[in-house]
Amino acid sequence: MSSDEQFERASRGPERVVWAVVGSDIGPLLLAATDQGLVNVVFHAREPVRDKALRGLAARLGTEPVAARPEGTGPLAEPIRQLEAYFAGELRAFELPLDWTLSSGFNRQVLRELEATVPYGTVVGYGDLADRVGQPRAAQAVGAAMGSNPLPVVVPCHRVVESDGGLGGFGGGLETKRRLLALEGVLPQPLF
Image (cartoon, rainbow, N blue to C red; front, side, top):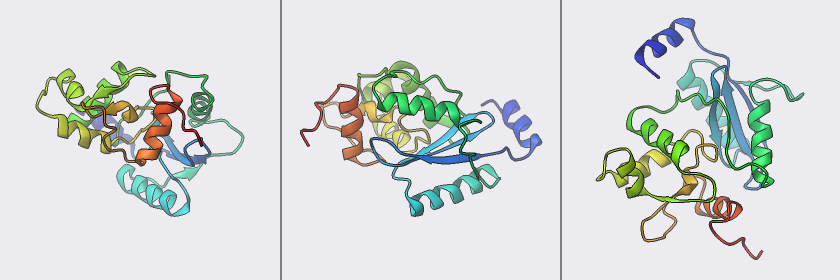
């Protein structure tokens, strides 16, 4: 977001933020959206995690998030539909408006590059992604950017791995990363 866009957004005051917790193959996910688009996805969104995430959103976005209406309309309807299709194996590319407010600078640059250039069923190394953004010595910084990703699954940080084939880290836990990569056919499905 340019400084002009930031100024315009700030002058409008706090935006409406709606949230919902949805079930998925990797456990409950908290989804939050503004009028600009999906702003946050949080793993393992049981009550304590959910409440902490909502407090963090309120502090960072300057408005209290409100629970989405259950009738399936509003800014979360399409993200929920697309995530359900993704976990059912019917969707390979998300086509959602994203609100990048919770990411900035190098982290946002790396995450946008990841979203635009690493498709379903593929992986990229931390160092390779650093090269793609013109910072060939920034593999560790790319790892930090993945850890700060406010939109995991939709912005697929699970597709970033170590150059030697190791999984690397993952904010949702390595088992979650394995399950997402198995869903996409990068790793074999677990036997049990």
